[in-house]
Image 1 (cartoon, one colour):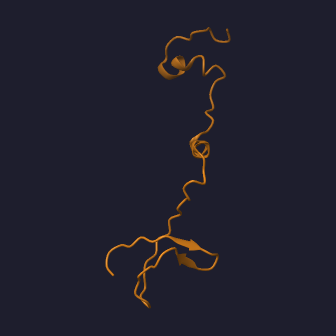
Image 2 (cartoon, helix red, strand yellow; image 1 turned 60 degrees about the horizontal axis):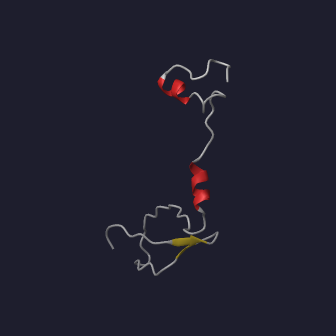
Image 3 (cartoon, rainbow, N blue to C red; image 1 turned 45 degrees about the vertical axis):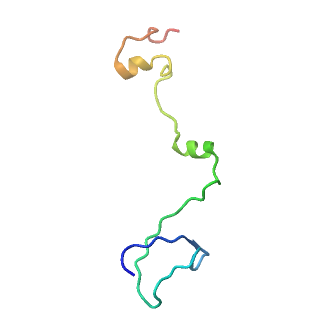
Length: 82
């Protein structure tokens, strides 16, 4: 076999077991690269989105004065005023 072959396997704690026939020559050394594959259908959309979400640290008036902080425009409300 030449080139690259991709196969899916499960690790049982001791041995990697291919999910399908590997069709490899016996007693030949192979280079194996491990990449974890998440099972599809196990996570909801909210689970996936929560992995990418976070909290932005910023001033208390960030939501009201975002243009001021992003673009330097004058504050809509004077500092400390509501």
